[in-house]
Each structure stands twice: as structure tokens, then as C-alpha cells.
Image (tube, rainbow over all chains, first blue to last red; front, side):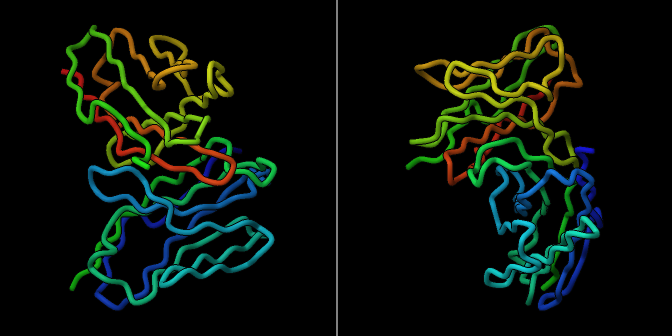
Length: 116
Length: 111
């Protein structure tokens, strides 16, 4: 019930392409869904996040699409650049009364490579 | 604001020794979380602490692992009698009511 499943495990695109990473969850108590970007030797950094009352959120070149009935959400990276090459993790957290408190359940990660 | 500070960045221990990992949360953050990341895997939650209290330790192994967040000083993740399977990156995060930030991690290698 606490799992978050992420796919694909790895992804290679050309510069300018639109990689899409997908996640599915089981626990309907999750109500906050962030995406994290991690570079080698660094900690995860928050990229963008969404709550289930909206179906899409866009920040710059990054867009989250959210399908509450299917319990799925995805990350789209528009006009991808070589500097976007990193590992991406989806995550989920249960209701914390609108605060940022609480443990995160992570997906397994997607290694993205963007070729010049 | 220096962010979440973890030290050491790299730690090498022989089997059977103790490992102590430290985490200083961001200024203004009173909640700390520890996660473990095995090679090519996602982060797994271990423990959630508030000052002097353990809020959730559902991800902590039952033996050899302990964590504390004293009133003064950093949070400590302690691993006793380390084994090779403990080799991993250990990340600390801290949060306030409106932010959640990860440190750069401690990479533990057990030889």
C-alpha cells in the first residue's frame, strides 16, 4: 500500500526531445506528489510538486500531469537539454494538514540521459 | 542559510565497527528525517524525528540502528557493528511547515 512504482528505469533522448517519466501509487491517503532531481554525489533537489486537486502543473520546462482516478502521475521535460541529464525520482506523502511535515515514499528512480 | 549539513561526506568502516552520521538541519527547521539509498535504488525512509522525540521509526532496522535528535546539537544516525550490507548513501532531510530540504548525504562504505 505504501509503494510508488516508477518507469522507465532509464531513458535516453536527444536534445530538444520530451522525456516522460511515469509513476503509479496505491495508497489513496497520499496527497502530495513531488518530483526530485538528483545529480551524482548530491542529494535530491525538489523540482516540482502537485496536489491531487489539480490535473496539471507547469513550472518552466517541467510539467506534472496527474490522474487521480488512475492513481498515476507523470513528469514531462520540454525542450530537454544535456544539463537535464540526472536521476529523477517521483515521491508521495500522506496528508500533513497542508504542511511540509512527514515521510516521503520514493519511486525507484529514472536515469535520464540527454544527448547533445 | 547553509542548508542541511551532513558530515562526514564519506565514511569507511571495517565490519564490526560503529558508524556515526551527523545531520544539522536548516535554520528554522525542527523536523529531521533519515533516508537510505542503495546503489541504483530510490531512497528508503528510515526515521523521522523532532527535537528529543522520535515521531516515526517504521523504516529503521530493528537491530544495530538508532537515531537521536537532541535538544542541542545535530541529529545522529548510529549504526553499531556494521556489516557490508550497510554500505549505502544516507541522506538527511529537514523540514519546517513550508519547506523540505535534503542534505548531500554521507556515503558509508563497509570493508
